[in-house]
Image (cartoon, rainbow, N blue to C red; front, side):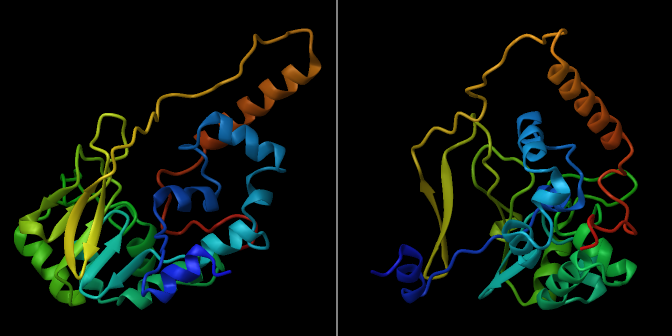
Length: 255
C-alpha cells in the first residue's frame, strides 16, 4: 500500500518545513519562548540538550531543514528577506548551507550568521510590516523589488508576524500567512498552477484552551521543592541568554 506521502510525491507535490526563530531557539537551548508545560516535558526526557541532540531523530532532522526554499518563482521563508541580506549575495542554497554549517559548529562569516540567525535575518526580520529602531527601516516597494530581482522571484511568502487574514502586501509581491491566533481568519494559502489562492479552512484553533491538570504546591513534599528549584534554576539560565542571540554564539551540545 502506498503511503499518503508517496501519493503526494508521485502527484508532483511535497511537504517542506522551513526553520523559524522558535525552532532555532530550541536547538540553541533558548527556552524563553517555550510554555512551561513543554519545558517540564523536556525535563522528563532528560533536558533540552538530550531531547534535541544531533544524534536524536528529531534533533538531526531539524538541523537538516532549510531556512529558505524557492518553488519556481516563489520564495518561502519564515520572516522575510531584508535588503541587507539580499545585498550579501548569498543564494538560497548558500543560505541553507550556512545554517547547516552553523548547527555542525563549523565556522561561518559574520554576514552568513546575520543572514540566517541575526535580528534582520530570514528567521527574525519584520521589515515588511514595520521598522526596527536602529536596525532597519520598514521596507519600501523598491526594496522588495530588489530582493525579488536578486533571487529571480516574483513573490515571497512569510509568516512570523501575525496578521488577521492572509494578506497580500506590496502589490502581491509579499504574502503574509501567519494567521496563528484564535481571532484570525481560518485560512491557508494554496498555489494552484502558480496562482495563489486563499482557501477557507472553517476550523477553530482554540489556541487559548488548555486541558491543564494542576494542584496546589505541597510544601511538605520534597519532590515539589525539587520541581520548584528546577523552575527557579531555569528562570536564571534564561535570564543569562542573549536576545534573540548574538551572531557569535554557537549551538549547544557540541553540534
